[in-house]
Amino acid sequence: MNRIAPTAFAAFLLAACPAPGQTSVNFSATINYTDNAPTGFSRWDGIANGSVAPFGSATMRGTITQGVNLNVGIQPSGTATVTYEFWFNRLDGFTLTGQFVPASTQTAVQFTIASGAGVYAGATGTATLNMGPPYAVIGSGTGSITVSGTTTNLTFGSFSGDGDALLVAGDSFTGTGTAGSLGNVSSSFQYGYNESTINSSVLTENNEATGTLSFNANDAINFYFEFSGQPAPNTPVTITGGTGAYAGASGSLTLNITGGSMSAPTVTFTGNINVPAAGSPIITSVKTVFQTVYANNVPTGLSANSWLQINGTNLVPAGTPAAGAIWSTAPSFAMNELPTVLGPITVNVSGPNAYIYFYCSAATDPACPQDQINVLTQPGAVALAPALADRANNVDPQRYAQVTVTNGTGNTSAPFLVPAQVVTPSFLLFDTAGHVIATHSDNSLLGPSNLYPGSSTPAKPGEPIVVYGVGFGLPTSGVTTGSATQSGTLPQIPECWIGTTQTPVTAAVLVSPGLYALGMNVPQNAPSGDNLIACLYNPNSPPTHGSAGVPTQAGNLIAVQ
Image (cartoon, rainbow, N blue to C red):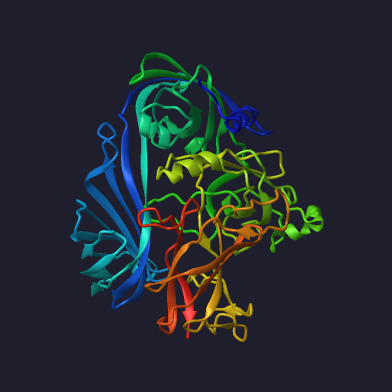
């Protein structure tokens, strides 16, 4: 039976109502689509610590994708595309790209240096790495890098780490047609398969499609819809922003298949496009706090009970004090309740309003280059049951959450689509270089001595420490919705490395709203100076090779002396 998710229908109804000052445009388009045929690939996403001489210790964040023939089982085959990023801290790193055919023995793979950041900005060069299996382990390698006209020979040492292999599969359509007075239009949309669909070859569960309608090289709208089996008559479609004249556009359409076949359908869209008035809120990015968007384009996304950073224009009042606004000033906070409204601001994440911690305005705060809002997602912000089931079967069904901001002027932003993940682990940081927020066993600050002179001190080899992070999902006991007090234990223990030594995690607990504490011991062989730290987390099961979980960011540092 065809069905539409309640959250999608609610978003559709809200999008149909133009806000004050918006221009509502009646829209109709007929598109002749062609099915590009179902495709699939296996994506390995991992992290490992090692060394790149003469530059020193590095964390490798890697992605390997390999095609899957969905008509002949689901085993990957053929040439794999590799993206390896080597980070020496959170600012400085470079990216290698290459291709190879995975083998049962270690393979020498040729790479090209595709990009760099920080002191390696504009880097070029080549490298040969002896890879796996498993492919998180790089046995050795050599190469050269050129930055600002200076060429340096490289030696890659052994890297130790792990990763998680997921199957990503789905279908896509492209087409052309007409849109009344707007003239010719081109369009595409795509959707991912869930675990049951891949195994049965039948679309049995809700599928989430994203697409675009392009009117020229500059002007386009983005859209989203859900369906099961095939789109039902009058399937609701939500407009999720756009480009050019349609930047920040919202509104709602209905989708009907009016002819053709399932492999070449004729589709009609009808409804309204709401073009925002000047000063309307527009979201430009959403991420878990302290996360980085990598060149390998692995989505970071959001998860339940996780801290988000939302950036954009006109998200908050231009007269916001330079110090910003913080949730401790909300009346509900005095009653031990997390605020879903702070000043005039509300943030919605796929149905429930998020808890607003802080916001600042680019108009009044030089440290806030774009309007910014920091929120904690509610426990029900992500549909965990299907997501956990898909993840447990090593499938990424490409699900989404919708984020909107209402800025107190009566205007609500267009929905901003963010990949919905089970977990989005990320360490909290003291500084931009990447020193993680951590404490000694006596709760004093752990960091370089010059980080907070007189207050922070490095760790010692063998010392028990506590490292703090977010995005680890929900504890085994769950959390009380709205309560400013949270506690509990993670359902599984993360897998962590300090340097190249795997470091057992002795405790993984929720200590306050969305904040997790990981207890571990610094390895006895940790050298003096900055040591890289990396973790993976899988809430479904203890870490095993090939299903170790979601990696933290690369380039995180622990000071040791």
